[in-house]
Image: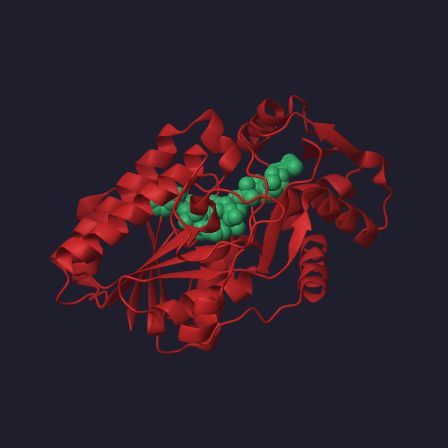
Length: 341
Ligand code: NAD
Ligand code: DAU
């Protein structure tokens, strides 16, 4: 099956492509990625000459390019990972989030409509953040929870989801939406909580915890998320949404303490900083529907996944250091009001 995978040089997309190239010989992949600051060719450097892998540099907002790829390579399914993905960046610069996450998704859907005779499935990679946030005692999000995004990032992802659903209802296109909680694992850009904290702990730098650190995230290993996406591609019912979660709710402060303990450092590096504006309090996913309809459930337990992940970052400090570009240093000093050297 010929797949167009967008955003495949990012964290989750590259893990997904690696999974398919290593374990599923029936897929041939075209990876369309704009190579933003988060799109790192090193994430797939082992596969550049792989016979079933083809890289195309370009944006999902470029209709002519998407049209060309669908027709030229007989694409049979589209999986859209491409996005601006960082909540903090969406707060300081929302426009690009609308461009890629909303208009880019619409561009893919328009091209999909033209090639509906050939493309059998479109999978939109969405997020639990479209549901808004939970109180500490609220039940977990289900697919029936109303959409209530609160950040520019989650609003752009929710808008994209609504367009995807509109193309199902209006044009009967076979689309599926997956919504997942916070991923951890190898190749995550170090602006995100876990790789940022690991790097700062190693360098004995302050660990910037937003607010009082009580906000809770539901952590899932990226490989479990990728397995879920594959099951949605193969078994998902058109028009449906599937939640994926890790069954591992951890407060941010406890996550930072966990990393400190694993790396053998004391807690004096923890620094409470200004809270993220509109900071979502808690996410938790109910994934019973995915278990029932797709036969999916997370396989990693939190400790095993986290220990593997920490080991990976320690063994790949060169990969991490290559992410620390001038752009990253500028972002860091604006975001945290302190220079990272
Ligand atoms: P990421 O930021 O690591 O990667 C995004 C990728 O998209 C990069 O390779 C970037 O170059 C590419 N990209 C950006 N704009 C593009 C454009 N206009 N055209 C083509 N490519 C473009 O993101 P990620 O963490 O891997 O997230 C992937 C997807 O999964 C996103 O849609 C995100 O909303 C969703 N998601 C992420 C998480 C998480 O915990 N990271 C959880 C749930 C859902
Ligand atoms: O829930 C899924 C979402 O998870 C995805 O849709 C997003 O693409 C992904 O970026 C992630 O969003 P979060 O905002 O939850 O992830 P982040 O790693 O930025 O932050 C995790 C938590 O840690 C959040 O509550 C904010 C907090 N945090 C984050 C950073 C970077 C800190 O306290 N300090 C920090 O320096």
